[in-house]
Image 1 (cartoon, rainbow, N blue to C red):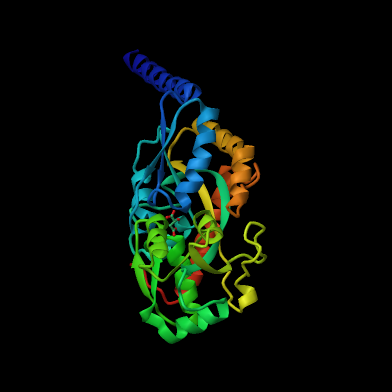
Image 2: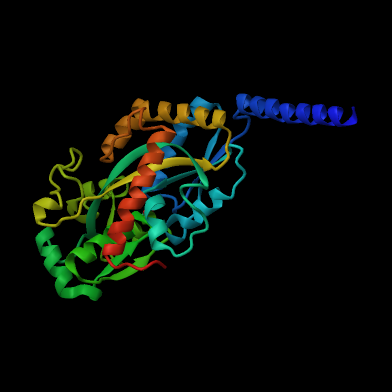
Length: 326
Ligand code: MLT
């Protein structure tokens, strides 16, 4: 008899937990949500995050606060979210670095495929080769010859091993079989400040960070890494036009820690889809050379598929490039 009562009590307890969890998820969110951006404020990832967060906040009825956690090419910030409480109040907005870091670091403080709940893709951002405005080369072909001739006398800025700027720089230096002097930053935001100030020679950076500087003549632009020219930068040739085989799109995704309740993930997915359909977001993204993904890509399944396929793709590229993990 005693055993039966114990079993009944245990069953009621577990059922109660389930009901409590469902009730918790149904009321979500009841307080502000933090979105960790694993790079400095004012950079391309931060720009995407703040545009999306503002509209998600309106949809969710709670503040969505951006927390910039720079360092180690985005892996510090990603690691912080991997071990955060899985209550839906700490999220990660990160980019292609989620798929390159596993091949660039011998031991990551997280597994991108098991330590997170994907919520959805956000956008894919083109990259541009830019330099300080008085840099000697004028065209992409002149730039490529100049790099080959001057190698380590040229300084190349990036946002750490695992960042998009480091990935693009690695591909560029491998294509030219020439090493430049690389200078790491906590994000492409501060790197751009030093390019504009003339302290650093060049960077390969996302249009969400370079468009306004190119249009203002604050930097010299050589090419965009997309198959076709961009409507917001029509005079900027593609890398292919300049004879450089280097195409890269920096895809971005939104994640929660593993184990986050499915109802919370669904609520966040709906808020993300609403943000990406918002006309202010769409028009601002267009000004910056990018477009939000469609609703069927702003989903856990689409982000999972992109993440796993990109991890495999970049593993092969990075190993072929002979780049050894940190
Ligand atoms: C940033 O937001 O600072 C950039 O995404 C850094 C990078 O990946 O190059």
